[in-house]
Each structure stands twice: as structure tokens, then as C-alpha cells.
Length: 86
Image (tube, rainbow, N blue to C red):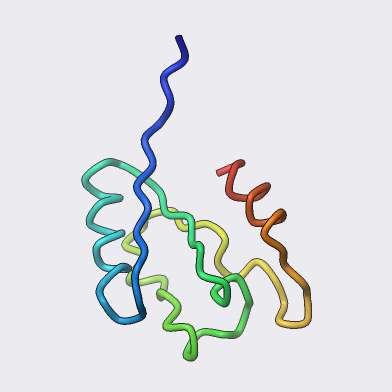
């Protein structure tokens, strides 16, 4: 029987510490982070989205951040396809 990898999902309002906790969990479980934030996929939208900086990433792989230009569309289906590959 195939064993599935575990998935930890962090949800909550802005400014409650999700980013910090995600880094701690990724370190503990040797994991990677897939961003589900609807605005952090867009390049150049750093301040208004409280986007994580390279320094804050602490060499933990992050996915689906800065992958689109603000004038490009992005759908739930595209998110599902891209996140399934990670």
C-alpha cells in the first residue's frame, strides 16, 4: 500500500504568526512551504501582502510566490495543478 506524505495546513487571519510557525514546522519536519495566499503569487506586491523576504525564508523552499504579473489571471484550478506538483 502506498504511504502518503503528511500535509500540514496553517490558516488564520493576517498578523497572527503563520509565517513564523510555518518556518519552524518546515525545519522540524524537513518540509517545504506552498503559499496559498491569493495575493503573494503576484510579483511586486510585497508590502501590501506582508510577503515573506528571502532572509525570513531561512533557506526553506517556498513555492507559488512571485509567479505571476499583476495583470495576469490566476484560478483555483491553476493553483491546484501547480501545488500538486510541489
